Image 1 (cartoon, rainbow, N blue to C red):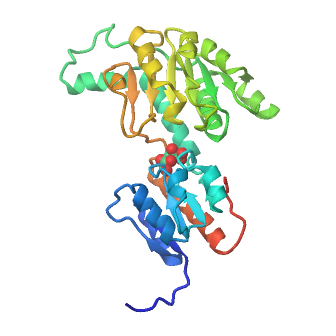
Image 2: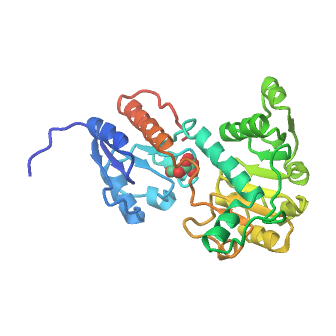
Image 3: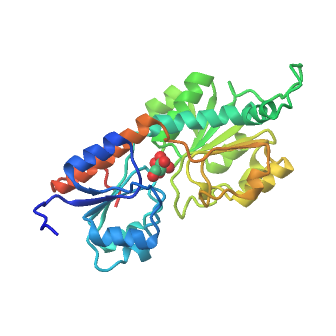
Length: 327
Ligand code: 8YV
């Protein structure tokens, strides 16, 4: 076995990434790629933490306190590929001296586009229409065939006015002439609120007064089951719920019940409480659009996310301040 003379940091990359990203990483670091792309279980994650200087991880890696408790620990940075980092226990990482970064900004527009796609799919019942046609159940045009509801000009309620919430707001207001209500910890700057004619209200009012509610909060103890049976009951019967944030923000059992009983008219979901498992109650319903966590799934976003994680790794390897440090 030749003795390695390389002083390049060892970086484990937990999943396959677009080729330009893997190339950039390989040029700069002693990379360990996951060629078969099988998700790493707790033991494999601990092996990576014990043997690499940094780990480029994703939402499919569960980096809880127990996994991060590995001895001996070699990793000093978790460069997360993605903006949400609830799968990493930040307190445990801090206690072990591991820095954490994410990739904000680069996936904003694509995730907002997907939220709008779900709004259109849910209000116009497009998934149902396609299923009808593919099943050869379409008997031809008639005036009352498969009526949905109009999206344009309606009221959109946004919960969480961060980057993605604002990108959705711009599309809704400028593209669809929608009226905007929003609930958020921080209010929009006056100029932006005026440009969008956005009204800041509390979460309950968003649910009570919107035709469509779209969720853009991070997953946390505070936002868990933010959408529960009580808030769904506040919505009008024609109301539509859109979730491109995280599954645990919604009480899925309460949502299934509300959709079954007609408490609300429909939902469009891209995220689930226990991915990749989907609540069987949701799968059995026609009035919910179900996508497999595709918010940032474009070639453009995935390359940009990878390069952003790479930039954080480079900054760390040069001892510079981390551009996207979250923990
Ligand atoms: C990613 C996401 O697909 O950025 C996020 O928080 O949910 C998605 O963009 C996923 O997180 C990749 O790790």
